[in-house]
Image (tube, rainbow, N blue to C red; front, side):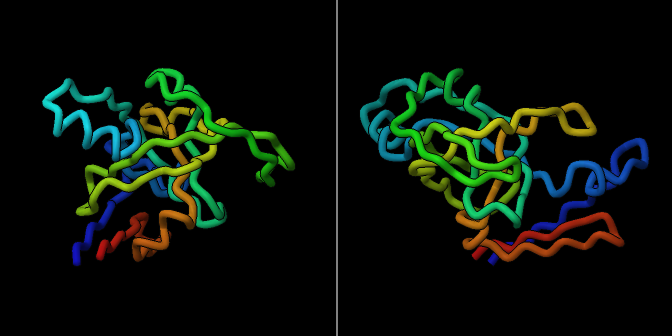
Length: 156
């Protein structure tokens, strides 16, 4: 079991947790099977897009900004009507994989992940490219400590 505490007071004293919510570093790339195939075949690695993921306990499923898939050259595999915070939307779905460099967690498959309009800058200027929903949070223990401007993630 691994425990990681995230202090969310920025360099300028800003409570980043209050403005952005809980953020973790994220890396998104091709589906795990394809990444493994490239590695086993001694072929060049598939590109990786790095950014931030916002933890959203209110989201049933995770979503990644479609611009990430466009930059990676990963095509949409399906479209689906989904209920979002802004009402019903028809969103593309993609296959990819995700890793969280700050966590002691193996890369995870993102099968049929939603392509939602996520992209925005965090209070400290880095791009938020993903929302982590309960579909991935089920593998973690997540504690939000607002008064201390921190959150804690425990991985199995």
